[in-house]
Length: 498
Image (cartoon, rainbow, N blue to C red; front, side, top):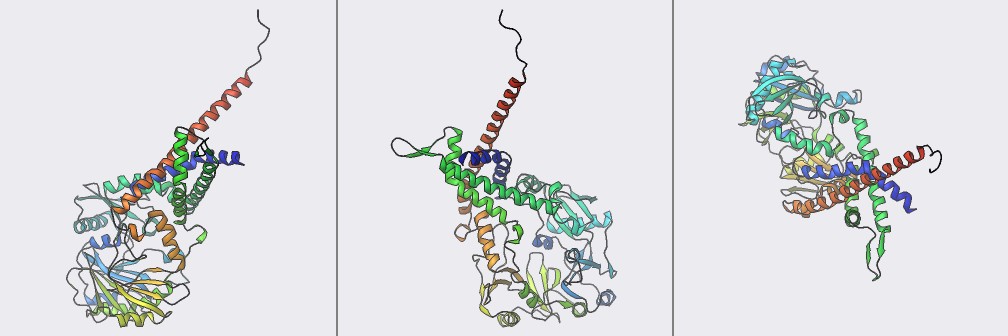
């Protein structure tokens, strides 16, 4: 039984071992540098101060009065105000339509924005660079196809223009005039060494989402199988010496692989299995946590109500760069967002209206009973930051439903920020916990680094030694096979000795 398992382990160790070693080496980079992406807060940071349009423009915007909106915001685009809306989900609309980018309307002309010229895209890029703080000058806007840094968003926002800056930074402008991606030369360099190999993310592969997903899933499954067989072989190859002490049957590099595999094989399996879970294979941890509660909290607003309130807006808090709807419990409110991320809640009459606990409790009353509603100003086991900051304070609502759903709600606007049902909590511990060691006791750095770095070094040793030995063993076997075939193919000698 051991021989076929050892055979499988060695030959799987060539291809899968190379991938696992690559995962380990790129993991060192991922500890400090993620995939380059433009975060929502950074997108806001790149906006110019908002100048509300003349109230007379709103009746000219040609939208159906009863069109229900799940999102709507007003912001500047290269010196003129624009409206961006997302219609509410509708069963009659296709998934592709519901995932489409927000529709955009130029409020200077009340006409839809369907695309930008290169000159318009360059103006958007210059405005973004100025307010975001890019040190270089926007040099040119060129049509951009799908590339390594837009593979996630290209189809949703195409056609794109790429803005190149003199300092090596790039930004991507969507057909709507939004900046949807921004990278620096340094981020791209580390992205190639970190996220791209770690996620098996080259453009050629990732642009086919179904193929990429299956490849990652099956590579991870084979990695789990490789690790399990390695643990089996490792235990089976232990021996007792004449003094009764347990020792390895191997020497040299084989000994290092054997011992490190026994000591850190379970950790290796945990990292590969939790990486597999990040793909949620076959929907085993699907979650709709907080979806129904979000719908009840926010409520879809008809365009007639939104446009009426926007027409009454005459002034905004100083520094506002974006005005977006933030309905709660069937009532219309707005959030005035500053470049620094500050949000001020405004009612439909334009008055500042801070969110109070009774109002939030009343909005939540339409759903399952509330077990607890607490304002927290420190992170907990589910709402915390690792690489990206979180908003504090927030309201934490625990519902008395079958899943004991947890909701984390923005204390400024009433928006649901995160939600956890049973599957979401399980995913948090099995994926984020095991893969990133996001445990409360290790949350602070550099403690997290001091724990992860030595563990990752040892797992890299397991994978790298196993891979190198599997390749060396395969090369020896192939040479023996080649030599045997050469000997067998030689013609027999004729005659005898003289």
